[in-house]
Image (cartoon, rainbow, N blue to C red; front, top):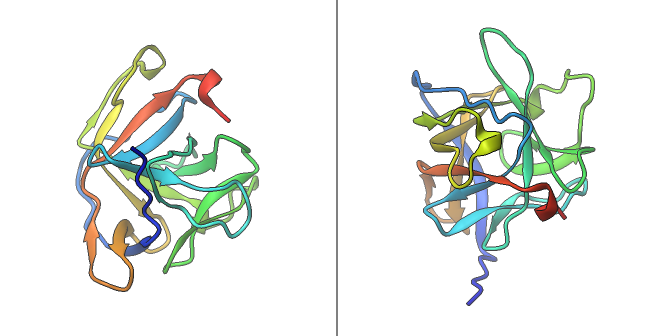
Amino acid sequence: MILFFSALFFAVMPLSVRGWCHPNFEGAALTVVWNNTCSWSAEPAVGAPISASTLPSKFFFQQNGDDPDITYTIKTAANINFAAESNGERLFIDNADWSGNNENQKWRVLCGSCEMDISQKQGVVASYCQITSKTDDFCIMEGYGPGPLRQLVQFQLYPVRDSDIK
């Protein structure tokens, strides 16, 4: 059975940063899953929203090498010329900024647990993750239509084999 979540939108809300682990994704393509039901999904096209779906998209979390403020650029695995961006109100896909100057494409990823050597793992490689925008420290949240928002507290990240990338 396939479920369709047409009314699920993403927004951003403030989050206080905690001292959790910063995962090393070792270049693996990942799916972003919460509550074992829905995943991030997005078309690799400028302006496409990142939404919830039971048909997940794959993403590369590229560590930017920032020190001490570790950030990631989240690129679509289907086409690395596109990256996740936030304008403070919504989460969407835009052209990847290869210069590294677009702060709206930099994300902090803090997780409650981070696996090591993930290239050798299957299943969850990071859990209890919070993904926040570097520009405003807002946490990615989910909301149903215009109603109240709630925090996504159980992001889990799964590696994807190269043969699964479409």
